[in-house]
Image (cartoon, rainbow, N blue to C red; front, side):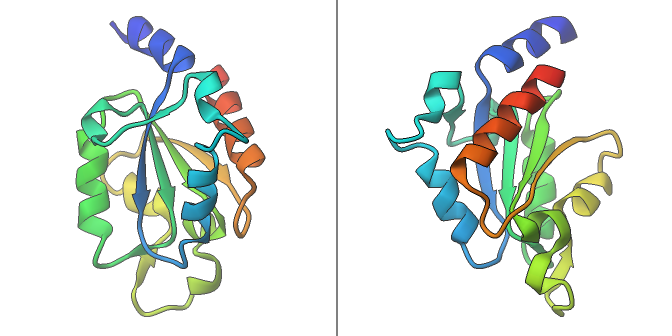
Length: 144
């Protein structure tokens, strides 16, 4: 069964986006990937409205204490195997929010609390370009 789900993940990954705080610059660039200019659907990548349908969890922003339990709950709902894509400097290393009192940590540390074997993709930048996000997702899915 794992081979079947891995095969479908490579061909047509469905993505669920979670904004965990920050300035929303990355969110704007993620939405730009859906426009006709970049057309992420040509790779079979589709944005879905439920984590239960997703193959990739796209997370932008540092994880605040307020959103931490919700992000962990969303991760539990995503069918495995799944990829967690950390989009932007804030999701990768907390960026300018590093010393903030309200930040629980970067995305990988928060997810690894509940699943030490999670698969991560890091797309640094403030904000990263849509081309970079598309290339990172395509390369990550080839390695699964």
